[in-house]
Length: 203
Image (cartoon, rainbow, N blue to C red; front, top):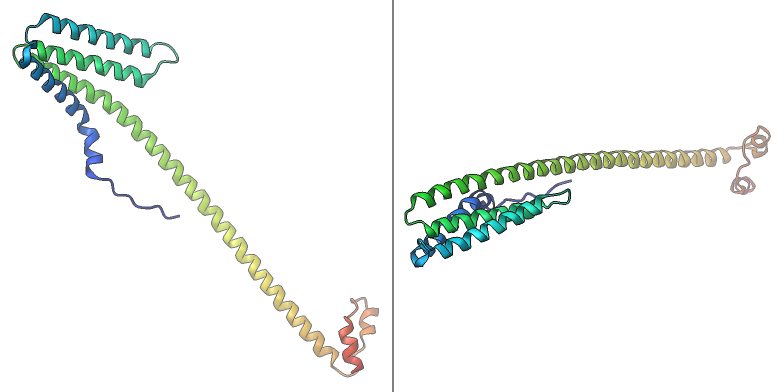
């Protein structure tokens, strides 16, 4: 069973690896743009971001509690909370030191969470490929057995046809010999010959 060879585009390989850095960098840039447009030292804007970040964190905590907790939803809420906190600090602070420090921390955390997901995804992919390989091997084994069985049946049928042809030719040649008596064969326990032989004898 031949499988089609697929070549992945380089972007499909590189993009997931740089997505966490792109996300945190985008939040930092937007926060600094917000800072330049009046959010610097604005207590109201900072309080708003604190409330939003706290609400997102609380939503993530609620989503992760219990046996029916949704890990994806909880992770999304915590990521949103961290992004809002980073944007709030980047917008409120007057320098770049603290925003850059939080950006580096957020990027490291994002890569830590992404690495865990990548390991799980790679493990699932390897398990799926192993299962498909075993399935292909089993199917190939069954196909080989069926091919051998069909070949054996064809050979047996050919041998049977050749034997029947030789037997018919021998019986025809025997019937044409002088003094051939089918009744003697019947008395000896052999099956009665077809009426064709009797017609040949009469001729």
